Image (tube, rainbow, N blue to C red):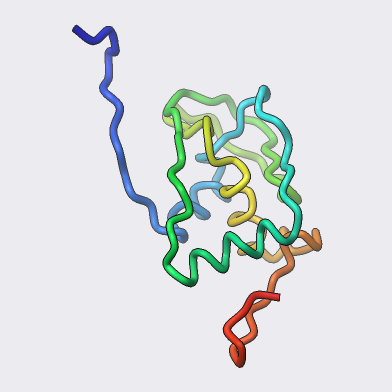
Length: 125
């Protein structure tokens, strides 16, 4: 007999919905998570994999309440409202942070996230 009050579920998010959730403060990073460690090449490889349709791994998010707070994701800083259903990142912080920053004009102020796509050769630079 399981002691879980709620059973884990699986959901699929498209990149736009995931990034919008991060920008809206619906996704939170717990204080015990390590900081962002990826280099520019890691961010570029993530986008290259997405464009090529390669698997980029699963995310593990834990739905829990969250207080109103200042949220920092890479180069992005914003006020997130209090919510009863924040998605706390257990696994996937590097990928979520890379996506949220590279696809936001303010995030591209950090060179790690300032990517562009060369249409002639089909590569991120």
